Every structure is written in C-alpha cells, then in structure tokens.
Image 1: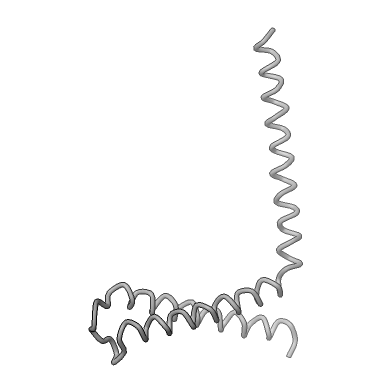
Image 2 (image 1 turned 90 degrees about the horizontal axis):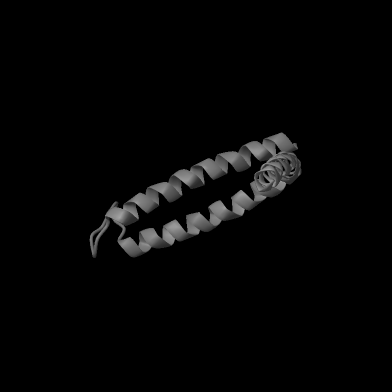
Amino acid sequence: MNKSEINYFVDLILLILFISVSFTGVILIFIYGPYLFLGLNKFIWLKIHRIVGLLFLFFGLIHFFMHFKWFSLMSKSFLKIIFENFLIIIIKNRSIFIFRNI
C-alpha cells in the first residue's frame, strides 16, 4: 500500500472513531443510574467510550505524524506572517508613541 492509501484508511478509521466517541458521549449524557440502553448500563458505555477515545487519540497521532512535514511548513509560514505583522504593529505604535511625546 502506498502512502495515500494508508492515509485514506487512517482517515476513514478516524471518522468511524469520531462518530463512535460522539455517539457514546451522547449516550453517557442521557443515561442515569441503573438504566440500560441497547442492553448495556452506563459503566459499560463508559468503558466503550474510553477505549474508543484512546483509539481515536492513537490514530490521531498517526495522522499527525503522517502530515508532520506539511504541518511544520504551514506553521513556519503562518508564524512568519504573524511575526512580520507583529513587528509592523510595534513599529507603527512606537512611532505614534514617539510623536505623542513630542
């Protein structure tokens, strides 16, 4: 399998896990006390929610490291733009400050 196919399957697994975590989270909000939902009590739903959440985190990290080069390049360009704009603002504010004191 090439990198794009692996990325497709990781993204598909992430989608399924996201839907599962969301579903179990909503179930946990509405189950009170000893009541059952689909034959499972709150504690079993909580275990399922935690396991699926850990799997989601694991595959999310895999996804992040697969795209680390892109993420680092985008972060550098984004931070460069922010830093340049920040310097322009500082320079403008300093000149205004200097003129106000005169």
